[in-house]
Image (tube, each protein chain N blue to C red):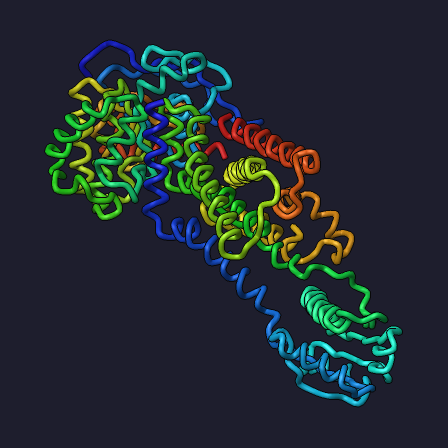
Length: 368
Length: 248
């Protein structure tokens, strides 16, 4: 045990003395959170919008006013018809066109349906859906305001067939996503690099010749990162809660237990990567391509899985963060208990066991 | 050589990787306090044999006792009784001199009190007292190497294995390094060293030369020179190594 503690101490020295490690460990989560939190969410600011007003009455101008004063949209053009829309989108002069039907105001007053068409530039599907959501929210609000105290309710119908989200979904998404990314990065990438470094420097041989058992060496390598990753998980959830108001509706203990499981999974993946790479560089590249990119692209963190081509959707099933993100989204945002996430939990446990098994096998081959 | 006590005893060691035979029926003994040179061209099987002696790898067959322990069955005890220094540099660059000593001595189970006492003596001897709290990365290579050797024998092992310990070091530092080796040998530590510097082979008590996985010669440097009618070890080595070429 004393030997093991000595080993742990050494590992912490390595981490605390390496500026790069410290930066990844503590700078990265905070910077990413702030970036995603502020940049992505506030990205919906002054979205260029054009209007085709076939009605030109007080209601349409009031609605346009509401929309532009929200700060999310900026009116850049008034058009006579939708003929030029295609070209405008192509040039990027506008992202969104609002089309009021003729007699919009009349229909609105009468209480029959007044319809509005939203045309969006869908080359950026996520942004487009976000924009539509915001726009619909504003229209709905306006509608409610007008209807207050009226006997015959007025109605605005919009013709984009996206159901109304409380438009916060994508804002909340980044906390689970960043949690998965950071834990993956810290746990898998940093352990694999730190083990590969011992191999590269030749110190691994010395450790293997010493009375330390291979298991002790691995545990010694992994424990600091387990500890630091867990702190990171706390920091991310804490910042999400206090800075961005992302709630933890479900059990906090369950959330932390699941995070711990995911960290263990990432650590065993890191060990596995280190058994197949002999230098820090290889470990780094493997982690980058095998972990970081899929974590960001295929986990459903930034790009919704349902929009992806089927082959990519299938591949996404073997991406561990996909399952972790489902789990924490459920716990944090929907307040689900274990009975709703046990399947995903089981998948993560299976993956952890798989990576450990593979590493042990690889390690034995090396000894022979 | 100051003892008849066998510290390493190897009988019919064979190691195969698939159809390739890395070590072919090796048999030799090494005695306590001896400086035993283990020579051979690259790929002759030196490192493989050394790994087996250190308990890092299992032999395919053969009886091998190191420090009176069986390398098959008593691996854990064996590891406590040996020291090892590899051709790659083996101290942690981002730890200080003392932290390195404390770490390595710690994993061999020495108490902090012993470590402190002994490291003070060691640093005095190496003239490194001023560098106690300096990071290894700041020291010149020669000092690092000497320190690495001292750390490898810090826990007083019966045998220390040195895998090309002086690669890339200037001749003066190499000479100083060998002074440390002699001192360890006088203190009863057996030194098992691989090298490809032939002048270093002359410093050994006995030398074995491996060619294609077999030991082709084993004797004192004097004995070998007489036997092969050579003026120095370089010549002895070349004659033996040439055998390998004929075969191919």
